Image 1 (spheres, rainbow, N blue to C red):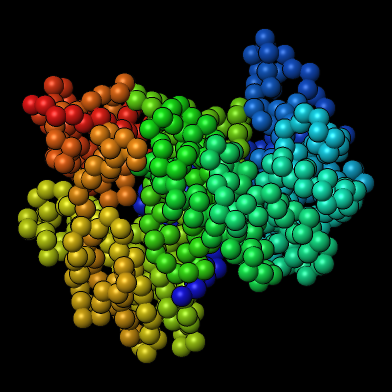
Image 2 (cartoon, rainbow, N blue to C red):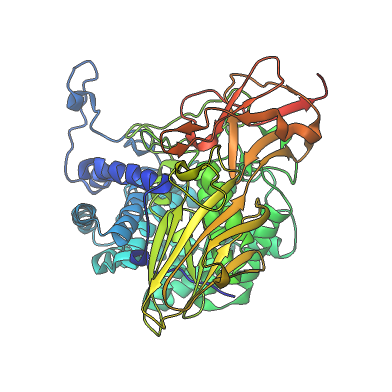
Length: 610
């Protein structure tokens, strides 16, 4: 059953963890000045502020350069300019979802600056890096990844057009295609295939997008030229193309193959995507978090124990693999892909965003006694800085999926709402997470005060409203971690169990149900070291707050019983803390996505002992 996304403005987050993180991200987007975002584009175009004669010994921010952008956006960086593309994409989606007028004005202002830079460069070249970088790439001389940086700006401009209908952004992107097309045409097929061995980012995807928007055969030509056959043919032949290879080089290329299939209908592209997922996930496995990389490379299949370190789980790979899972969920309707998204959402995107500052952790370290290394607002601008700002504008797009005219799938159990038009009329659907003490349901045995102890279930309320006779079929994912059968209260006669989901039949008017999905602490072993486990509740990995690797005493089969609730209640909310029991010293556990600066461990060897 193929699915589609609602339009961005039709669904939105309601109050809750995801919306709080979105707001942090929105504030960060607005905090970055036009001058900082455009600094390298203006330098390359020979215009604007040339005052880079800094005086670090002086006290003012301006003299010391603290108002400038540094890190990967330093004027000497070979990837300079990459972040602005992410910013454009993120700001466009935030405006599309929320209607944010201030961000819309900022987008217009930044486009003014880019338009001026393109004009000063002769009407085509728009990037913050010189054309000579492409010459170095073509002749095999050392250079980082110019096409990666160039793709980011094209992506941002195209996303701005797709999300907001901005025609000027499309014109800038199309004009920028001209010098790049001329460069590509300067190489025969064999030579260009060699060039494609150096990271190209999502160039294939942006050509597919532009083909879908314009129908211009130029983009068909570029699709063909960016078909990296050394990778794609190997995938189709079933060879292991991933082990110890840079992960975020290939994931965007396969996302490009996915978009090429959607635009052209060529089944080869789809087979490439399916073969990649088979190699990357089905036949490889994951860490307890859902992550799969260490030091930016793919781990060997089901061999993770030796790959735990300070540079595990790169944020970019988490974001792009979520995007790939979303593609396959839309193509197939299979909710197992939503389970994958959920695990990586909570233990990747949320765990690698600082809940206080909104900043990103490039990696999620999985060594014992690790700490998250947070980026700064203007001094780093890593690649993961860019995927961070995009990721936290797109959460609402992972919750709801449309099937047929009057069919809706709820893929994630988070606070969100959607309004959708059907042939019979409009319907509104709201998901509310019931995580506070005000909840009173069939299992609330403590009177109006609610549950006496923290519920062993994840509970949500689904409310559907439409005019009489405007019917809707709502499919609600039953997560893979659910213990027992889901509990249903409210309009129970309208709910049935079906293929890993609950089906709610809304006949029109108002329908409301409360759903409870049983949870328990699970001990999840690392694939190739079964005596070492992580503790997981529902989709959330629990982090033990220790400064080194610690072994626990007990029987492996009883490992979940080693934890007991700790500080479970605060005002109107249930807290998710735990502590060890029966150990020489107690260790406190909390959800990984709530850990900020504390040292932590996720994996614990468990050995027999009293």
